Length: 180
Image (cartoon, rainbow, N blue to C red; front, side):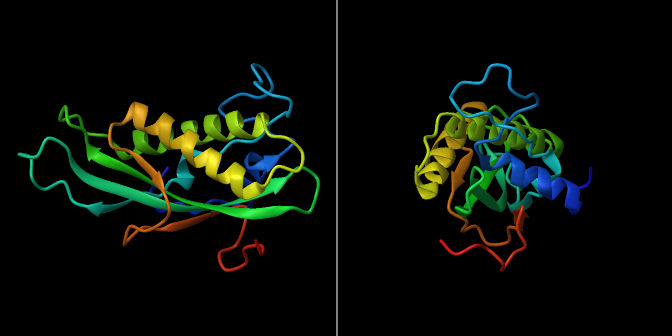
């Protein structure tokens, strides 16, 4: 799937399901191995991670080189209630690691999607009714950061701030985010 692929309405609905509290399951399978009291369903697919190269890998003398990033705005809903917010974060990965191993775009997209699914399942499956969505978003980003940086040294999950990144909406239209 190409870097410029725009998610279909069907794929956007999956993204909403992924980040909907109370009826969710992340990763590549559902329900089995659920870690907490809340069932978690839905899957973010790799084509949502439309990384842009924001730093070229043009100096092979440097141990690691280049950088790609994408900004994500994901709808976060609290079960069947009307409570919702937008969880905003940037996912950044090196183009080449310190061991001179190139990280192909497809591999980066697959890893980013798989770990986002695992992180959201981990955090939301253990959440409690009435828990603030902003806290759940923060916990998701912390968990996601730990998972991603364990696989790719130097990977980051942070606020959206890299110039030249694309902002990709999950389950929302940009500019129509719910009020906090």
